[in-house]
Length: 171
Image (cartoon, rainbow, N blue to C red; front, side):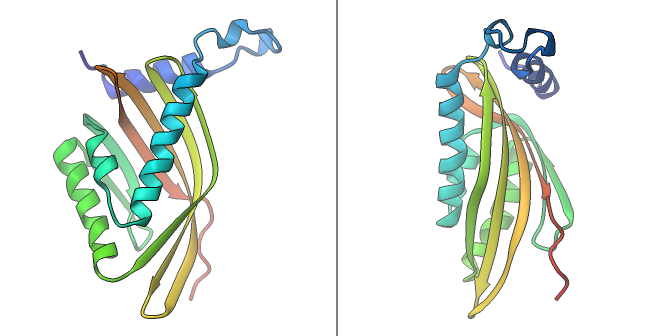
């Protein structure tokens, strides 16, 4: 049975938040699963590594059928997708940038994941640099959040949001 995406976010935030009154206590972290946190961190790192090579297969294969994404396009304008078909179309559009001969380099600056055994949340700051015909644009500085849930033993992402954390300087 799949959990609705908005419920996954709510559970992740509750499960992964520390109770300020129990600071220093392990009580607030009983639901945390460090092994699961490492698993979802590895998924995000692998997804960005694949993306550097022009592949979006990990993102496509780990998208929950009801996944939602809010992102920015190559012009910095907001775009969104909901459901597997729209997510795949969004990622296919991004792949066209790589296929046009543009080299895209993504560097993760910070990645923090919190998770229970079956629900997790990651915050990531990353830079993207675009190079084509000897001209370089960037780095474009972005931040993202990802919510994931374990379904039948596999981690699926249910929510992705990214936006600029710094506006690029005008050309």
